[in-house]
Image (cartoon, rainbow, N blue to C red; front, top):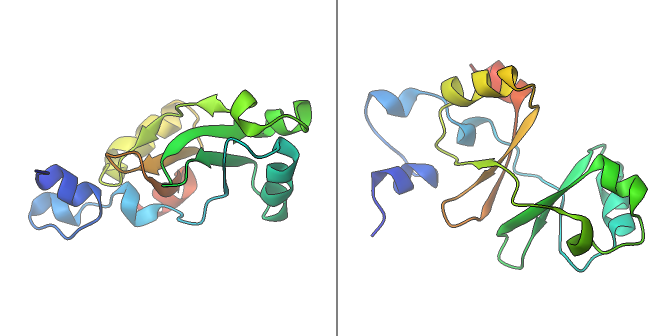
Length: 136
């Protein structure tokens, strides 16, 4: 049975002093370009550039995060399938991660975004550092 931490991690309402602090859930972008392992890199690249982004997340049919495609892969491997060149197991955070904890770490490491997923690996969205900074 899931506990309080999981309850909050999936975005359900909470009470108490900590409940008022902004979390990744409060600042994340839910609209994320996703793809599957069997797609061609070039096809994903077209979707990514159409919205002005520079990466795509690789998910399975249940929206479980498997990996990531970054900008450099698009130019180097256009005809290859995603599963052969994806970056497996990207670093992720949970939706209930406090912005006051994660934003300073992102700044110190010069990281512009973090993948946000639930405890069971399901994609929630992307936390962009600038959105988190604005909310703080």
